[in-house]
Image (cartoon, rainbow, N blue to C red; front, side):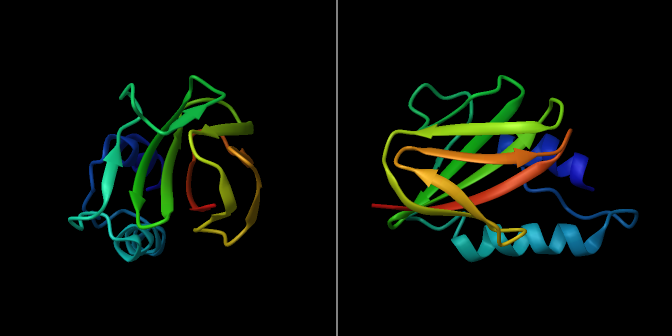
Length: 130
């Protein structure tokens, strides 16, 4: 299930859960995306390959698609590489950042967010702009 989400979510593809998936993981991620307001008229999406994306990754193997709504950003990260530390650089400074799945507070130093991610895993990070 997690690997399926890694492959689909950064491409803005919302999967349906099949009977062999981990429904708890799928439901948790689905609820995070829905609660943020993805799909709302005032929610802007920036796909990882777009030149005007407000997020850049320190790793070519990490795909980061972002959604901006109100004064917040939701970054959906899919890691195609090995485990390690990732730094995301944003165009706007942040007040705070959190891994929405684990509730872990992340290091948000101005325009950067740093976090650990496992091989072939995903992270859904919410930040609040200054």
